[in-house]
Image (cartoon, rainbow, N blue to C red; front, side, top):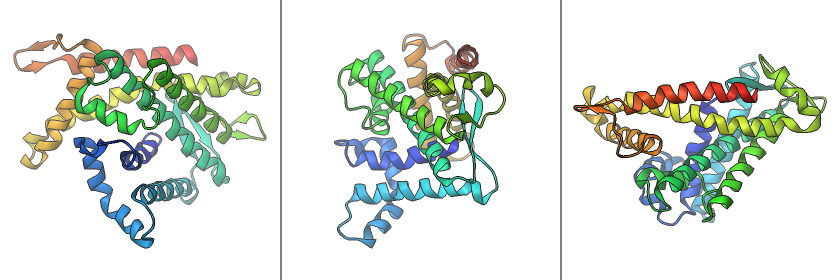
Length: 285
């Protein structure tokens, strides 16, 4: 649930952003998101004929966020967000803090997506990276609007900092005492000086490595979908495209690390990210 909640919000956000990005809906991945959410969005739009498409999608996003914020109290469990592999909790007795934690974790994910998109732009140029980069352009909107790399990096850092501040406030009781677990007491030592949001923002940037690692794992599983059913051929093809994009981003397009028809590049990248993420997280913790 810690990682699925912001990913679900990002799924709906892509529909909202596609209404503002010119020709964004022509992208294969964005188009599939729009197809999946088309019925609920048009149903909400039908409640008020004057409601624009982006307004109906934004309303759906707000309803999903409210439902996910009410879920912890219904399940008698505290909402949680993960930074550096360590959970940060918001008290379920406070719906505003739970909602802030949801918003903060989503802002952190949006900043991570913006950093990933920035890496593609830096590596392949503004118009390189293919459909994967185009999808990231939409997913990271409006952080993908700046054309200058430094401005885009600043926008991504701003989202990470906003997410860290929201999560730090959501997990605080009596002003500045974090609800922590595991290694958090050491991290929260600077909470009273305002250092905690900065540390959370830095950990959020490092957690991008973990996000890419698990996307690789999911992609590798889906890439074998055609062996299970011909209906999974499209999903398998899309998974291969994302895997190739990640490996080209890190290892370069001319280093396939292949033996015959079998490429070991995704496996090498998976273990490389698995080594770097906890190492960098421990340095920050």
